[in-house]
Image 1 (cartoon, rainbow, N blue to C red):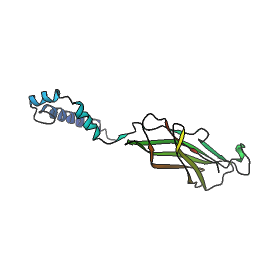
Image 2 (cartoon, rainbow, N blue to C red; image 1 turned 90 degrees about the horizontal axis):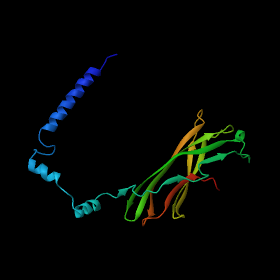
Image 3 (cartoon, helix red, strand yellow; image 1 turned 120 degrees about the horizontal axis):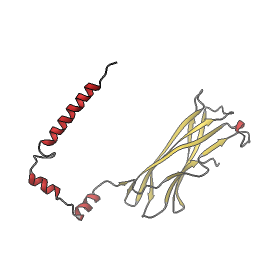
Image 4 (tube, rainbow, N blue to C red; image 1 turned 45 degrees about the horizontal axis):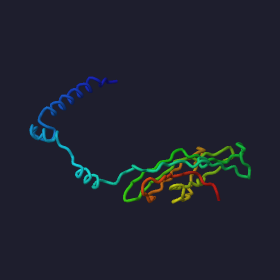
Length: 194
């Protein structure tokens, strides 16, 4: 096995020497004129210049992005089959939510949200399925009122001999009207109701 340490140390020393030499030759953005340097050091942005720069920038991203939460009771689903519930030996499969996320763009009185969830389906002792449908609901509440709610059925193929599989669902461009100060929450979870 070859020892590369001396070569790396020599290269690092050479790179550092070059970098320091570059810093000592004039200014970084020009010829090092002392008058220009003094002007730049004393430059102060006026409030009007700051306002103009802010108005021409891209919309704020995730400044007021609502939190995403897993709805209580919606973090798991169980399927026992044959009308039996609660008996672990009769379990055919279960689903779990591993992760949820969102990102937002805030602009012109709207929060545009992309939201997603990652989960798994695991076969139980009685599970022989090769595919399971995961019913996932995304919802958005503003001040306790639902303003968006959509259920998605996600097919999750399970290939033998593995007895589990991951699923991912992403919803793009959900527009939420926003005035400022509202309590907005994004919910996600399994929805096994009819």
